[in-house]
Length: 311
Ligand code: CP
Ligand code: NVA
Image (cartoon, rainbow, N blue to C red):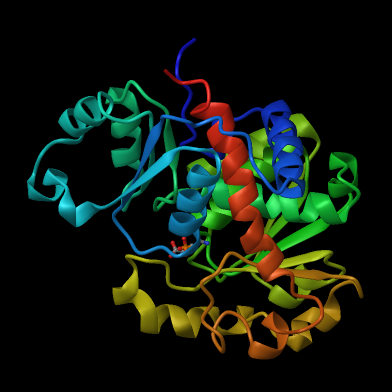
């Protein structure tokens, strides 16, 4: 069987996604996980900082009986100029799968192209597929584990058209969800991403909107999601972004416009006082730590699917 990668959320089918949710929910209930990765080493390559992705993958791999080999990119010859194709072909002879967080999505695509083993995207400048699967699991658990119930929700992402919101736009398009991105003018999604997500939404019966008015976007929302205004690697734009995104702050005034049972999501890490206030992230609607916990469960399911059957 050919190896499978998870580089973009679109590498999965809606059926794959539903199956991952079921497996993850089953793993979450069990005190002990099956040792599907026994005798296997999974390398975790990080070119950017991480708390959740790094620790949840390492812990999940250990729970599945495998060995998580954590490699900050500085320790690899990659940082001294070894090419990604050479690194990919070498590592494929030592380990059984790769998880990588990289600055450039294209590097992850090259790694996957030259690797004989599954490659999982742990965040790039373009996408964060593991994150949105954990987010989806968090909503699905709260809505009776029915995808049809998720299709009735108004899911609003306030802020940047970044890796997380890009994967959400594609995911919503694939699953027929109702997704609104509220972002400042000049920070809209790239036209090719928008076109792809709209094409998917057209085929699935989903709804995708990009608005510049945060108050209008939050009206009647079932889910309000936000992420940092300045992603890793964009630090030089920070002061400009802080000004542009200020009206998009997820605060109590915006929460008041949403449905009474609205839930608050944030992929974390959060910058309190910027994209979200303390009151909202600590308030009764916030489920951000349930969301963070689900990174562990869904990633175990992803590893079982992609790496559990690899050589
Ligand atoms: N949400 C997320 O990916 O967090 P980390 O950057 O801590 O991995
Ligand atoms: N958009 C954020 C997500 C962090 C998990 C970043 O790329 O920094």
